[in-house]
Image 1 (cartoon, helix red, strand yellow):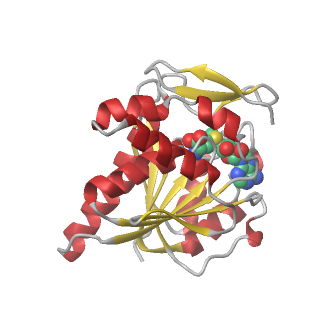
Image 2 (cartoon, protein in one colour):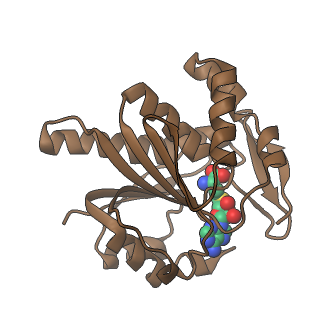
Length: 240
Ligand SMILES: C[S@@+](CC[C@H](N)C(=O)[O-])C[C@H]1O[C@@H](n2cnc3c(N)ncnc32)[C@H](O)[C@@H]1O
C-alpha cells in the first residue's frame, strides 16, 4: 500500500492510504487517540482491575495487537512498561508493514520525548528498533519489552496461533466499512479463545453490530467516552 504522511490536530502524524481513503488514526489527534483507547482504557484499566482483584501489582503482561502499522501503540506501551516497571510481551500482527522510510518520518519520538521528559535520541532509537526488529522472531527491545511481529492476514484467523494467552488486546484494524473482513464472528471468536481470564479488549469502533458479536463471543462489553471527535469506544472484559 502507498502511504502519505499527514499531521493530525494534536500535531502528531498519521498515515493516509489513498486506495482505501482511510487514515491510520483519528485526524483529531493520533497520539491523543492511541493514548485514550489503548493505554488508558486498555493497559491502565487492566493493571488497576487486576490489582483490585488480586491485591498484587501485575509484573508481566501479554498484549496482542491487530495492526502494527506505524508502531505508535507499541511505542506508547514500551514507554509505559519502562515507567511502570512491568514486563511486556507484545505480539503484533500486520499484513502490510510500513516502510522504514515512512517510519523514520513519523514525529512520535520528538513529541513523546517532550511529554515524557526522556531523551529524544533514546525514544527515536527505541522506535526504530521496533520497526527494524526482525519479523517472526522474539526480540528484546529493552529488558522489559519483548516484541514479536508477525506478518499475517488476520482476516483468516486460523493462520494464527500462540503458546501464550493474552491479557490485553488492542484491536486496531481499519474501520468495518473499509475492511469488513476484519470484524467478523470468526475473527472475534479467535480473539476470545486467545484471551486469558480477566483479559481486556479495546477498540476505537463503537458500532452496535461489533459490540453484539463481541458480547456473543463471551466478552462483557461496555461503551466508554471516546477521545475528542469520537463519542464512544468499546471495551470488553473476559470474566471467565
Ligand atoms: C488503523 S491502522 C492502525 C495501525 C497501528 N495500530 C497504528 O497505530 O499505526 C490498521 C492496520 O491494520 C493492518 N491490516 C490491514 N489488513 C490486515 C490484515 N488482514 N491482517 C493484519 N493486519 C492488517 C493495516 O496494514 C494497518 O497497519
